Image: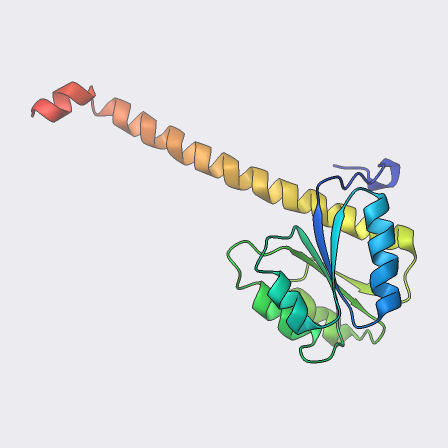
Length: 165
């Protein structure tokens, strides 16, 4: 288990997309996350965030209420991507219903505004660790599949004898 409280929150190389219609929130998050080494891109609407997601991102921080496309619709669209980012929903209008809906749609976590920069750093770091664990599990499963295939092939005898029959 990772002790996040004792971590330096090294986000070097992590690609994060921040989608929020409030410029001050976007800039605050950009400053905080870039200071920890993350590469941060900003979007002021759900629609512009979705367009930016044609490139891969590790984490998406999205506001619930935005013009053009709200955060819940954005989550729905993002989870349809081949390799969706970890999603963290942020809102100043938090209700239990919206939190439950965001989690059902695929959000990793739900953060209420106003938040302290340290709190958002902790959530982002945990989401990043989860993303790394998911990638590692995917690699291990593929390696296991290859190992099982090679075991099965070795039980069938040599390749030469199989090709001659």
